[in-house]
Amino acid sequence: MWNKDIEAIDRKDLEALQLKRLKRALELASGTSFYGKVFRDNKVDVSKITTLEHLKDLPFTVKNDLRLSYPDGMMAVPKSEVVRMHASSGTTGKSTVIFYSQKDISEWADLVARSMVATGTSKNDIFQNMMGYGLFTGGLGLHYGAERLGCMVIPSSTGNTLRQIQLMEDFFTTVIHITPSYALHLAEEIHKQGIDPRDLPVKKAYLGAEPYSEATRDKIEEQWGIDAYNSYGMSEMNGPGVAFECTEKAGMHLWEDFYIIEVINPETQEVLPDGEAGELVLTHINREAMPIFRYRTRDLTRIIPEPCACGRIHKRIERIKGRTDDMFIIGGVNVFPSQIESVLMKVPEVGNNYQIVLDREENLDKIIIKVELYSKMFQGDLKELEKLRKKIVEELRALIVVNPRIELHEPGSLPASLGKAVRVIDNRKL
Ligand code: DLL
Image (cartoon, rainbow, N blue to C red; front, side, top):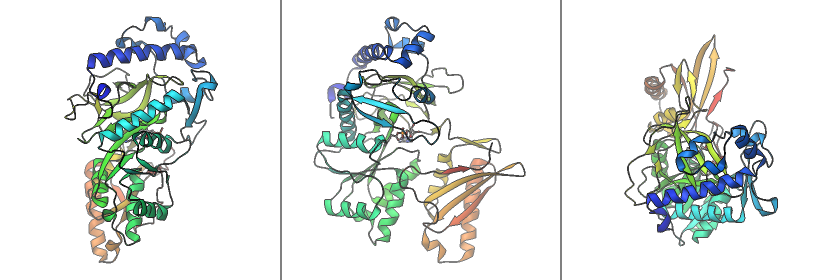
């Protein structure tokens, strides 16, 4: 372990640490224009928060609150103490901005180093970071953590596929950090160069920043001949390093010395007992420049109540099942894109890219699923293709009830993804 005292800490001691940090975070936040007002409006007396149970007395924070407090309504230290900001890529309206002090950056790096060690990575590894550098947290977040651990970092960022391949080959990259959709795309590009990704020195991948299924993980592991670890985070909670799988690969440890976890029923907002599925709500208790309380992540998951075989006591969360807001309703049925993906990725002929288009014709919901196949599928008989199309329709119909229209495409014909894939296109104007 990177820090056994914290990772295998007694739960009682962990809770004492959480309470101490929560109180400090509340003090800091009281001085911000945003939380100062929230506490006044909701008659929250922070000096009365004396147990972790009292967390429930605080109102939730939502993404829109961060937009409303733009640019610095949540900054809790003097500006001269802030050393970095990140921002999430908002397509609509103002983006949400996050601030970090020197201490925050350093402790975040530590958290990431801890996460990487949990997957067996060491200072002997060569780490190629194929996540975007810049306002997005994925690049710099892992970069600092990998350096803290002592890896040699290749900050290759996204895109430029040929250079990525060359770097992997020439510098013997052992660990990559990449979105699952880009991992699939890159594997294909590598094949096009006449190289089998399995022959590269890469042994491990950290996959995150977008939802994906267990079947996609299996596929990436198979294509690359590697171990792929799930990594979860969001800019509001620093970025990556919030929750990470250990070598058990059985759910992600959410680092509770930094974050207090709650899972709520997204409709009633009631806090659910461990084990029940709902929306993840996180409180950041260890970022002095910008504490956030009871942040509604919109991500759906479950706490795995059983202890992990690795000996770390920090609770694990399950793979994110979807977001309360990416779920779509088609013909009255709630569908998560991840469910469709797991059906598609189990079909061996299906390639690496797909797109879900929702449409409405004569007041009826239509779902068109565009699927890329491997090129060898287009060399054979048309009848074979038709058979395959029917097979996919049947498997999906069992899941989403509504008759999906399946379009089969040649590899490379759907827009390729370099960062986060846009999988669902909703043309329905609901
Ligand atoms: O995506 C931070 C990150 C970077 C995480 C690199 C992991 C690796 P945001 O851009 O703020 O931050 O997006 C956060 O992405 O609320 C989830 O909905 C989704 N997400 C992130 N990781 C996973 C994952 C970064 N492993 C939002 N599985 C989150 C499913 C994920 N969804």
